[in-house]
Length: 314
Length: 270
Image 1: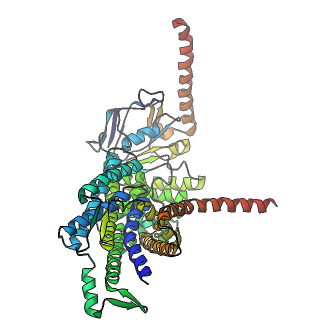
Image 2: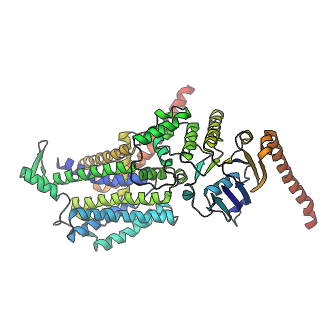
Image 3: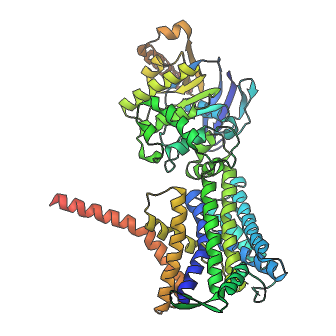
């Protein structure tokens, strides 16, 4: 049960990352690799703020703001300095490695004694049940874990609803159109470059937020923690799209899909690890999975056509 | 209303791919005038339209719209005054967004876009009201993805979107060229209807001679980046497709003449 609670919590935390990747990849169609750096930036900023005694929620907001700033730079590099989108992301990601070390002052900041955003829920649960472990479906679960799960679930739900509302506002529809058809949105009088910049900023803000919560969940921020995060986010989105069906492209369904995809992905990973998958192979497996998810539909289509052709010849 | 003064544009200057697309074009469009630009391939007709729309900035010359010098305005800023329909029926709309969402984008063309909800019941009703006269049954499908419509339907909606807020100038870039004959005729009729009803100033690039004769009040003919004919008033009213064909022939013959003269002159320098 601890495993399932852990996988769920991890999945929900990383679904914020998936939402960020959803905005850049699917909505803006911007291949943004800043993510690997901005998740660490969000984590390190929050960790440093927490250790310095800033209350958990403002510190978490700090992680969001830091991620946004990183995304803003990537966006400006691409739109105003005409650097290719992939390279803009790589430049900022690389620079962030040093920035993160500067922010933290060392490669790892533990924050065992600092507060976290789940403190409030933990206190409440203790008051209600007065025990260190609470039975969930008959299994005892530590209050601390359960509090984190509930807090994260509430946060993710709130963010998902806010994002869904935003994407349906006048500004949000313009951002979506700018991603899909820049020519069209320019003809409607919108500077698509700024739509892109702010979109990437919000995307990385969510990634930073994900890092901020992740750091509090695992109790430390580490300069290496961002490696491969973009691919994880992408894998989650792909799973999500398989769950909701590719045709459902309304913002709400995309958001729900990304969240469900991330949680499912974490559960699958938890199961695979339980079955003896070497944790070191995790990123290889993830990359292979994304590759397969991108290539197989295309190959299956080709194979299908070939079979059809064969039968019509016969 | 629209005044183009001696606009010059050279693409890829100083390279082997140098194209002198506009070699000093000038034209003046009165308020409420609907003009067509015709010309051979590569004559610069689409380029002149794009120069007005702001797809690129001219090397020299000025463009005035409604008395304002817009020569250095970026494309999105000019869009506050200009409505556009593109040749590619997919270029003017976002395929994965719904019909209503696409239209609502055009309802704030050139205006600020805040955090108000884009669609509400009143806006939906307005959208239904205005697309009902298209007689395409789209008023019952406004939440369907734009990508589920045919090219003709999308082009009709793009036209409607370009004129939803009355533009000071409407630019049509061969907007029926990529459609099947029936949809092309439908969109052409719709174009004429809207322009006449709203008394719009419009500039249309076309390579259909028939369209050039039937729709506009004025025909501007371009060749090699210059305006070579400007047919309006009584002369336009008398112009038939055959007359335009003759005009093209004249231009072509002059080209041949240029070459043959060059060949005759060349030996003297050799």
